[in-house]
Length: 325
Image 1 (cartoon, rainbow, N blue to C red):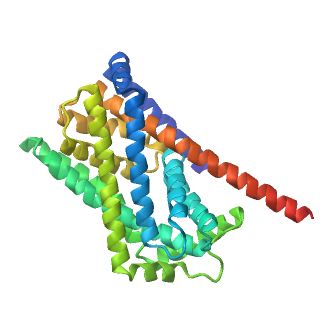
Image 2: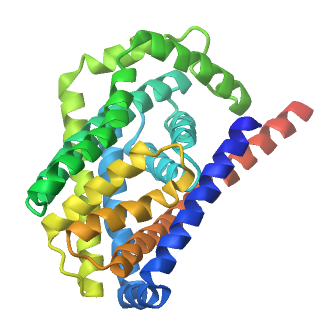
C-alpha cells in the first residue's frame, strides 16, 4: 500500500510539474506547434517508432532459441506499451510472459532472454547517451560544460547499474524467486527447477549474438532522433538530425534515470526544456515535441496493452471452463 501511494504521489507530482512547465511555456504557442505537426506528422512519427520496435524485436530474437520473430515483435510491442504507459518493471514482466505464451519456449527461457535483452539495450543506451552528449558539447560554453558532464554522469549511472545487475548471480537468484511468485499469479514462470543465472550466463557466452543485439538496439535508438527531426521540420524549429540525436539521447537518459516516476511525467518535459534551451529551441517548441511523442506513445501503446489484457482474459476464461468440466 505504501509503495502504491508513493508511486501515485510521484506520478501526480510529475504531472503537476509538466502542467506548470506547459503553462509557463505558453499554452497557445504549444497548441499551434502541435497543430503544425498535424495528423500527418503523428502518423510519420508512429511509423518510425514501429521501425524501432522492429529493430528491438530483431535484437531480442538474436538472443533467443526457438521463438519465431513474430512472437518477439508482438511481445516487444506489448513491452513498449506497458513500459511507457504503466511502468518499466511491469513492461518487462508482461513481455516475458507474452514471449513464453506466443513463442512456446517456456517461462524460464523467456525470462532469461528478456533479462539479457534489457541489459544489452541498457548498454546500447549508454553508448547512445555518450554520442548525444558529444554532439551537444559544441553547443556548450566553457562555463556550462562541467555541469552537463555531471548531469550526464548521473543519468548514466542507473543505466550502467541495470547492466551490471544482470551479471550478478546473486541478483539473478533474487530475480528468479520474484519471477516464480509472479509466475504463479499468471500461470507461467521460470519454474522451480530452472536456474535463471545459468541460463543468462549461457546467453552471454555467445558474443556474436550479444554483438548483433547491441548493434540493432543502437540503430533503433536513432529512429527517435529522426522523429524529433521530422517534428522540428513541421514546427519550423532550427534542428538538424544531429541535434535530434543530442536531444533524444539525453531526454531518454533522463527518463531512464527517473524510472520511479510513472510515464516519466514531468521528467520528459523538463528534459526537453533543458536540452532544447541549449539547442536554441523555444520553450513552447520543446514542450510541443514532448507532447507529440506522448501522443505517439498512446496511439501505439494503448492497443498493445488492450490486446494483451484481452488475450489474458480469454486464457483465464478458458482455464476456468476447463476446470469446471
